Figure 1: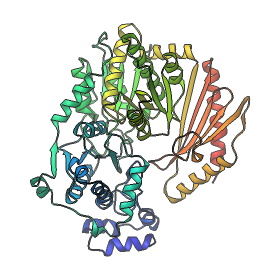
Figure 2: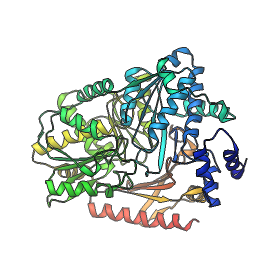
Figure 3: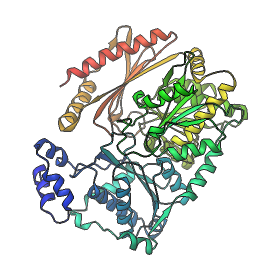
Figure 4: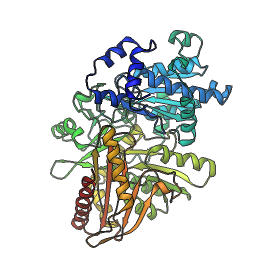
Length: 562
């Protein structure tokens, strides 16, 4: 069926409710109809993510139930033990998150699969922790992470507590493809499922266990616990768990941004709730100046990502990028563990291929290996799972430049709660020495060189945008830029050719002879193509000029491709 046939099918089929049909009848623009029905919302290793609305290419109760039926059939094929181990489900503050979580629970229950459903909003890392704690076969978190308010998503995890990789995703997708009609999807009444013990609500008992295990990861108690911290959950799930863990850790000077304290699916005060964007800190900065705070911590709506700002000597707050935060954490963790004498001989830091290299130099100083994976914590924590099987390394810390971090392995995904605790501890440790985190960062640059960075995202929405992104990738794949004044291209890595041992991925990475490099890839979750630029030099200003030169040359080429 073409997009018009699918549109008419949804209007005429009794399976779809009247509210859905009314929404579809209200669409006047044919381009909008095409965008909603030209494709099915794709199920991949990131699960589902898209705009909320009626249609096959949207997040709604029907696309969620279809994906869940595929997951249920995958679990059923693995036998009674897998079905009884069950699936843990969490959800965030977004529109329909609670409804989508409930629908997923009812579909699983109807297929005889046990469900552990959180009774209220929870951060994504708590879902990962719960899978490991309850030993479930799988997990679901309904979230669109840091996407704009009109998005929602559905991420699937497997028994290790990490997001599914291609093998499980392919099994689920195969089951979804075998479902020829929505009428094949099973759905049990919620009350009936609870009575039969197929759906069980969970909550505080998991929170308590999670907190206890997080507190075991503290590195040093010789810190200034009176450090003044502004915290904003950006109206998401982090408010209660982050404040709770900081209080239990002994921090007494935590001030929450009042306008962004409580859940708000419209993200009224921030618009785009991504703390990777410095504009998300507007309210927090204002409060930080008023309170003369030392640092600001922000978590995204599902509290897996975290970013910070640090007060400089002039009383202004400076944004610390994801790469810089990762570098500070790697340095702090390894330096503290060296003092304790418990850095594992086979220890490893894991980072993504588009994350900067300063942490690699720091890790080398402590005789710790750095391993690179494709973008995404399914790959980063996939290494922790691999280490469990092979014993090849001990996973210490994983991170990527897009403000995602995890320390240790009790959670196998980005963890904004754990990281907030570590950032507060780290800032308190250095404050006791009379240093800010900016001072520490400058010390690292002077020791290892000035590693500069820039990320450029070009938004290209819809079918035409997707095609243009494809053309850009093909042009750069066929004809790379060979020089940037004195910097010469020495190596190209095309991750579609699987040259590195990683799974194939549509990423191009270009290495220059001075240690600088850049990479291009389409976003896996948003209609964007991303350009990552990294430079290195002993001189800060020279390193910055290198970034500017690479940016102007590459973006000019990208913009010329129509």
